[in-house]
Image (cartoon, rainbow, N blue to C red; front, side):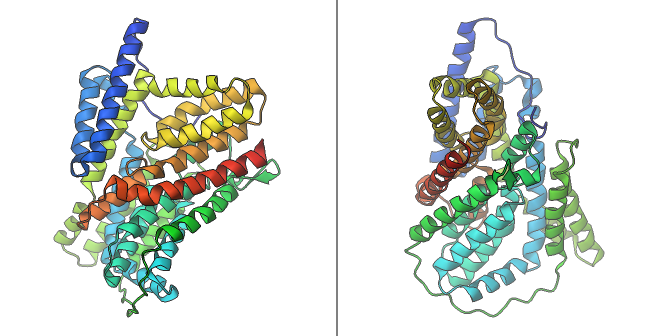
Length: 445
């Protein structure tokens, strides 16, 4: 069975009649559709929309009141909060500004600087949660944009979508990879080489190359030359040390077979507290500490909490399960059709639904389909991971990393529309998924 962390929680509700099941599923789908339409149309009010929608799911009985908090992935919430705090200390140390200077020194144009940032975030995201990666690299992108006098929106979007792409590369890169590793008994090295064949890491890298070429073309309007800057002096490197330590501890925690579900979140929060205590011990003021705490983006945290409950309601009502059954039933014994459905249906669903409960639901279905059809299960497992992880890049609300990046931009005074995000996210996603889709079939069919 999959590991307990990151799975949707809460007991499955049993309904008395088939009509009641259909009625509640129809209601859940309608509420979900209205919620996401409002989220796309009213970006300033997203957390309130998500929380109100979650309340409606509880009020109409789709989500039992006593299971509401169980649907929220507190590991993700704590990890985001702790990482935001550490990143606030990191920014105050002026290290992001120095990294921006170093990147600018090596790139001839602003266009190349943004591409370099996306590759940089991809490297980090292969070993660190996608949201944490955005919180680490996005401040560098914003700093570069300020130095060059340009909008930070393309840079931060590039960072977010690149981090989502590389999240599928290793066991520790994303929650969906952790779920797959637990269910299919894959260890860290299996993502690099398994059964004498290349694993997901190499498939993702080739997809990243194709997507980066598309990204470079998408940014063709950014033709300005990089303006030389003096290197920013950095007096305190301790916050940078905290970030590196966080990365190391998160990787080490992935090798612990039985651990509390909120382990990663506790690591991030604990290191943030260490940073605060260290600042106070060095003579920092309480006001400076409060600033770091206030930099934790409550807007993003509330939005994610609401979405966890909404998606949990879909799972509780059996909607996601019905989607999974539809994919398994439609193939009718044709392996290629089943594989294609799994990949591209996962892309479509993950563009709007959080991929953690979706992958947790689909893994048993995919494993069962592989057993019934007598096919190599890794073909369908890797296809599921490819579609579900990368599909979140289609929309600004399809992945937590996207929501986080847009939240950081909002704090800088930049509102990002769905169309603005999708102009970069859609071609990037199609290039990466198509490459992975072809390679997985060639290697594992």
